[in-house]
Length: 247
Image 1 (cartoon, rainbow, N blue to C red):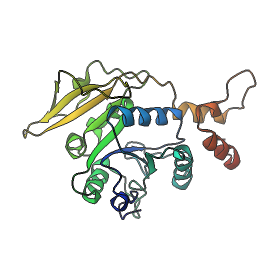
Image 2: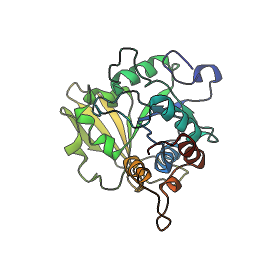
Image 3: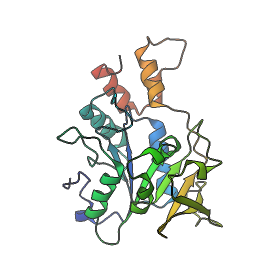
Image 4: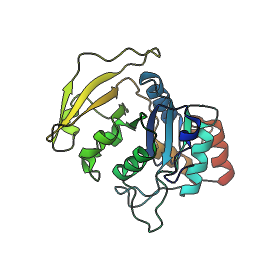
């Protein structure tokens, strides 16, 4: 790991297009993996960095599992996929201050070798809140956004979700990808004249919610209903059972 908590990609030189994928991962589920795999294929990424967050500013109650548990679950969820890596770039701060995506992306950009491209991957539910994030209007210019659709999140009017001062211009078409992933390409502009590409993955209606999984696990499992553990990678489900999490 580097000082910023990202895997040591400088040394191996293998990754050129890197996506930061932050979140609570409380727990990491199959929907997270589906989003990352789709982005990997659509944008021809070399690496997706899964970064459990220490303290989310907009979630003052924090996470159900502690940071070390969420890190271990994330590690288990992504093992076996060579293009996925665990990042501690969003680890808790010593002073307990919130983690801000703008700061984390800035550190990651500074740590990447020249010529590397950094993207920011998120679900549509996260994108709907970017206008409330710390310096949210600047984030797309640190790392172009890749937004994956989520059930219940309307994306037919993206302009209504943009932080103040940003405009969105549709592009005619995206470069084709060999993975066959549906993707829409646009360009964001700010009032200073900067522009950044914006990528939407509209076809990923994966109906999995970490909060629903936690709630179902708190209830007694019924033999008549599917187990919520089926929505998780097997290794993560095993860890949750062993640690008796979310009970």
